[in-house]
Amino acid sequence: MPAPIPTHVGPYPIRGVVGSGAMGMVYLAHDPAIDRPVAVKTIHRRLLESSDDEPSVTARFRVEAKAAGRLTHRNIVPVYQFGEDNDCAYIVMEYIAGRNLRDYIQSPRKLEVSQVLCLMLQLLDGLHYAHERGIVHRDIKPANLLIADDGRLKITDFGIARTESSNLTRRSSVIGSPGYIAPEQYTDCDVDRRVDVFSAGVLLYQMLSGTTPFSGTDEAIMYKIVYEPHKPLSEATNDEALVPFDAVLDRALAKDPAQRYQSAMEMRTALLALATEALPDVLPASILLAPRLDGLEPKPAAPKERESSGPATPLSRSVASIPGSPTIPMTPAKSQPGTVGPPSVPVPTGWDTAALAGVERELAEHVGPVARVLVRRAARGVTSLAAVRLAVAGSIADFEARERFLAKAGAPRTDTAVSAAGTQHRGTQVGGEAPSGMPMREGDVDKAAAALLSSLGPIARVVAKRCAANSSTREQFVARVVEQLTPSVDARRVQADLWRAFG
Image 1 (cartoon, rainbow, N blue to C red):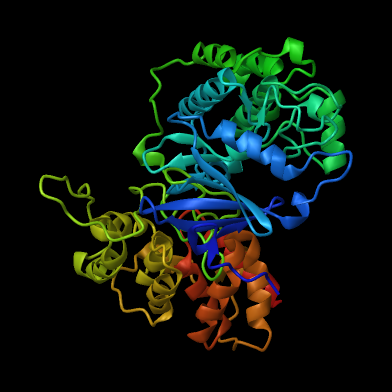
Image 2: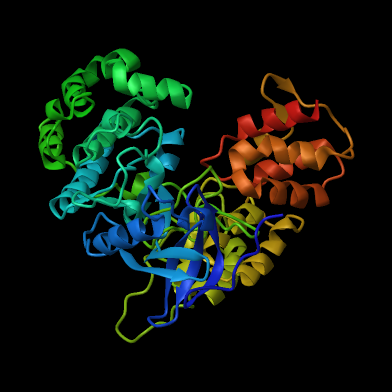
């Protein structure tokens, strides 16, 4: 049984669950003092226990969260507070609406070189700012980098960073994610800002090639990082156009910190020199990933911060992390005299204005005028109102209200906006025709939920149950599941997984 969701953490009422990790839970909460949404990251009780030879994790996080709280930069998610409540310690951060960089790396639409450089320059700007103030992140990876609804990159989880002068972190304790951490983090050597430079090099390699330079089991990754050279990017991609990046990566991924770029700004300068065109300050709106649901049930997978983010699997990231849309307030927005309303967003091709108006009105009760923007962006590339509801539901902070809104997603289809593209793939498998008229059987929901887990994350079972409730045959079930998918999810793969699970 999962642990019950607390009603409060410290003075913050809990509105939902963003996700969980090795350190603890991340909750979507409300700051009553300033009337704003916040993300609250708790630390597991077991990590609060100290031993004779190791300083308490609480003490370390207190020192480091205070230092991180002093960081004010456009590319860093701010830390508001560190606190303790009964058996847990917690960090309060800005709530961000957006998607994390892992979603972009995993998306079928690959980032262009100019877009990769745009993100890298922002990352290195934020790191340089933190480093100059004595803060080292130590866990730079795609899940900790958020893309806000305005295309800006923001670094999150600075609350678990380390001050360069801190003596509270044991050198022998490895903190970071396999594949992204520097050799000295494995070898009990001094750690400084150059570990973040190494991680930035891994990230650059991954964004340009689609894979990390070091892979395998955790033990294999550790050995490769410490002892083996990475494969040149141009060889890994078989792309001669990327040859200029090899020299940058050789320095960024150097085993010896002394041979690495000595600062994030030094690496930034080297990358800027490779640009063959003027680079935008932020990612263009045209490539921002379409909104989608980031967590149903007690795990809304919402934002970790408030302008760009949230970690996890394809459909399990952040309750209100909606990248292509404005930041979502906790209470309905009210128009004020002289204020500018939401930008005009055209009705997507294949949709009738009236078909979306009802969903827009319902959503507006929870998020205000921005509902029109969210609904119309969500409708791009999907074929049913149910799919639109699933995509925008994450913007509703209140759990019960979100569930009521989603309850209508399982109703029979009434929209007339199904495009030919949307019906083309129904009932077909990769590699052949799907069986016809095969009735749903006992156990099919469990099989489907397991098959959908890799594509949909924690909401896989919810989607499976809802689709099964309105399906008498497996063909209908598969078709209904496909209707719920957002553009970033591979529909053909989902269909193949489901038919394989059904046997």
